[in-house]
Image 1 (cartoon, rainbow, N blue to C red):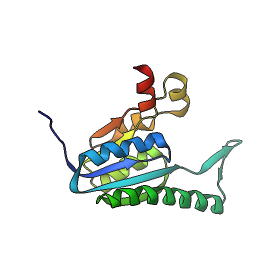
Image 2 (image 1 turned 135 degrees about the vertical axis):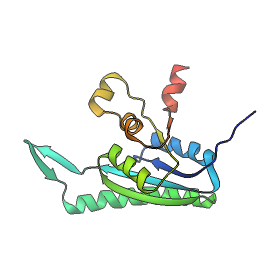
Image 3 (image 1 turned 60 degrees about the vertical axis):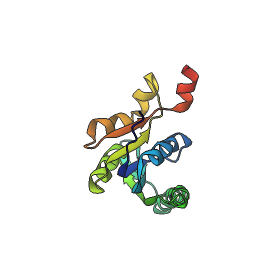
Image 4 (image 1 turned 30 degrees about the horizontal axis):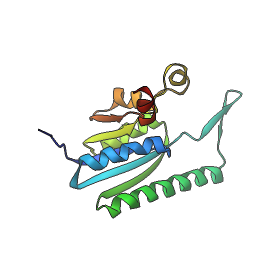
Length: 155
């Protein structure tokens, strides 16, 4: 017997990579017929540190990054809308795991559906794991989609 889970509201965090977009296929399968998918892209702080001091990106660079993220989400959102899915698009600036969890709470989503880059060892140590942190901090269920390229390579 196949059990199909249908949820009313999903949050799908996207980092503008094809790998992150793999989560969309899973979200499409579990969203209720009149449900909603909120897509969020978080631009990681837009601050660099030079000699121990915060240096903010120039305003025009920040605006350009935000516009590119909005255009990216708009394209994905339009594809979902063509399939009759209600979509909300959000671009935020900040710490990705914190923003993702805040959006999940503020939008009262049923679950977060996100991909993992599948970094191990040194890569995880250097880059951290947004997925791992969301799993630890989230107050709602999190469906983690594995990196399909790494899964295929292991099989």
